[in-house]
Amino acid sequence: MSMNPNMIEVRNLHKSYGNLQVLKDLNLDVIKGETLVILGRSGVGKSVLLRQILGIETPDSGYVEVDGQRISSMPLSKRYEAVKSMGMLFQGSALFDSLDIGENTAFYLHQHNPKMGEEEIDARVAEALRMVGLEGVEQKMPSDLSGGMRKRAALARLIVYRPRVLLYDEPTTGLDPITAGQINDLINKTQEELQATSIVVTHDVRSALEVGDRLALHFDGKIAEIADKEKFFKINEPTLHQFYEHAIMSDDFINHLTKKVKHA
Amino acid sequence: MLHTMESYFAAVGDYILFILRVVWVAIRKPPQWALLRDQMFEIGVMSLPVVAVTGFSTGMVLSAQAYFQLSDYGLVSATGLMVTKAMMVELGPVLTAFMITGRVGAAMCAELGTMRVTEQIDALRSMAVNPLQYLVAPRFIAGTIMLPLLTVFSCVMGILGGYLIAVGYYNLPSNSFLDPLPLHISSFDFVSGIAKSIAFGIIIITISCYKGMTTRGGAAGVGRSTTNSVVICYSVILISNFLLTLALNSSYDYIQDFFNRWL
Image (cartoon, rainbow over all chains, first blue to last red; front, side):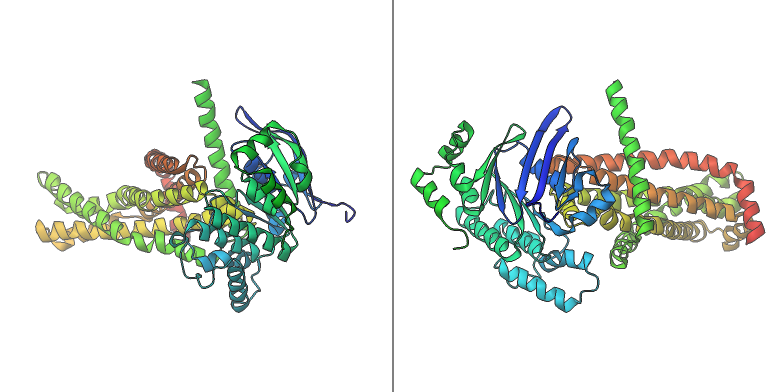
């Protein structure tokens, strides 16, 4: 198993909702330690793919393997154990609004590390919040924070338990360009700190270039293209061209971003 | 038509499966005390005022009607018995269940529904926490414990209200109201009311949580499923009340026998 360079393997995945076929024979490998960005238009089923990987939903056929464990064929009760080392940043942050930010951030530790003392939990919560630039907001409720702050708090809730697989569902959607840039930096920082394997699903080309090692295009229920960041933008594909056109980016700027060394 | 019937039966099957899962999860790994305590406080203690008001006013109106209707036949001494029996076996359990549906069930459905549409339930799963274990099991246990207690409280308030009206307003001698009670109120009446209230507790909590957990479609969806859950709760409470009455009455001998032998 240690020979396998892939952290996540998705094979022949099919998923339909009623008559709507969302995933059609989707295959995907994610290499250990990389950040893979999946680009795709809204509604092609990018989030659906993440939900299958996380085991929140069960595919109609095909399977998902994470670190050699076949998540999608496990009974629900076993899945909870298997996804303990995974985490997801949801599009709408999904902070628990009955708990304050401190309790939200400590949630995983309280649930799964009953032996950990309150002091250690508090220290780890404070450290996670400091890492995302939200010192001293432990007592605030999620509704008191702005959208960007909520995203960062949700990221702190993930960082605190150091998952080895991180899934980001549209991390920059609905944020202003400056906040979006901060989130991208945080994703890179988290990646560096945790040495995790990450999948970032987005339709934000700029974010894709800033955080991705490899890029993939999700189109018509499949992964249509996948390549290293530098090669990806040389692919001649109409949907991709539309993406660049609408992102209002010059070739020079794309070149600048693809060459930019991460974590620099 | 056939399709609607099919989806209706599928939903009922899904709901029954939901109850079994909740019971299984609650037994296998009982919820944390802090969660259970919060829910018992929310369902039980916070409902005391509204249950007190409904119980008290129902007792008063029962007493006024009983006294008024019975006085023509010289049967006013049955007023206390009528109020007490009616409160214990029917009105106490049903009215308490109605008030709890409105006060607790609707809020529960809206809360879980909002959590569902804002991906908070998925977030629980993503952090390896079973939402049935964390959200539903504490509510289920707290509801099943609190409904019978609230029903007893409602009956006490009802009898008190009835007593005050009969004795204070209609000048019925106090012992005419109270003396028949120990003779004619049996353990069966008590068991009947408690059994009903436990069943209603399970019905209210499971329907509200099920409708909440299966909510779809944003804020409008939350509104829809909350309305639905309240309507379904009321209907199921009334129908099951009738069936439970038949079942309990036909096992009257068995229950009385059981109590005489063991207690």
